[in-house]
Image 1: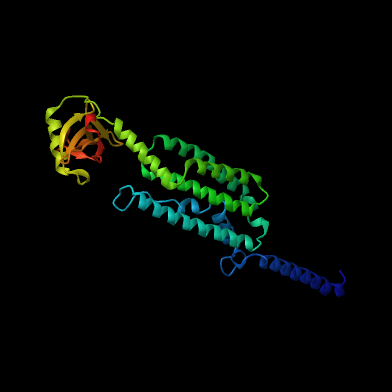
Image 2: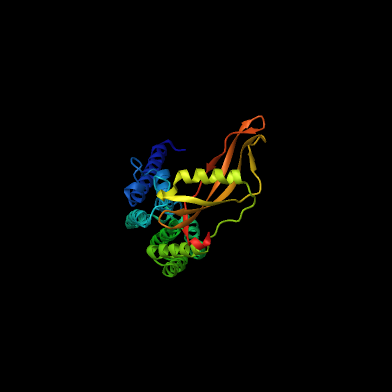
Length: 313
């Protein structure tokens, strides 16, 4: 190589490298700061994770779900559930704002194009959810089932925002139409809870005690006395009847085959001081004491009392 050309060749290479770096910097600066600034949240991995949170992982499918049980482990009432729905909707609004900010920054398509398949799969699941809710409306009786209706709202908001990211993808439009049609058919959260209460009313009108499987006067008397002591649900009641609903005790064992406890079930009829009637169920349990013996029996997980027509007892 001609020695006089050596410095020139190196200079040319340096100029090409400098121009390339400048071009890369201009491309990076075209992205929003959180997707470009390596000194803050813009390193490639963090940028990728941020987009995942909006599209493929979509944190709203966790954070926007409502709580249906209170601190006392009891199902929330209507007001409590509606407050949970309000919290969920606020989270969904914040999510939509994030997507708007992302798209307003004119992000490079490479940041989100590879998440399309995942987004379509998520959005399309709403159809299965609608089928499930329609089935639940016919048989479920708990107000907590409004959880699924709000979950459908999450899918709606997600699909609406994916249409912003992928405006040319018509499948999202089809998914959104199915969701909106489903919501119209299923009704508002209040109307949905009305249906659950109606289902419960129809259920209790037909609810009767489980028939006895065996006669055990001593065990029946034990259940009668112990359940009367509990005075469940703040009702002032007496236990009028007890049915033992299994023919024998069931022994539970650990992984080594050693007994841990045994149980049998019962159904109770109660009458309140103000003339109402109700039904409840319980397990009677005896913990294993070793050597083939069991400890004293006790009521285990008795249910709340369901008020029924007195003619059902």
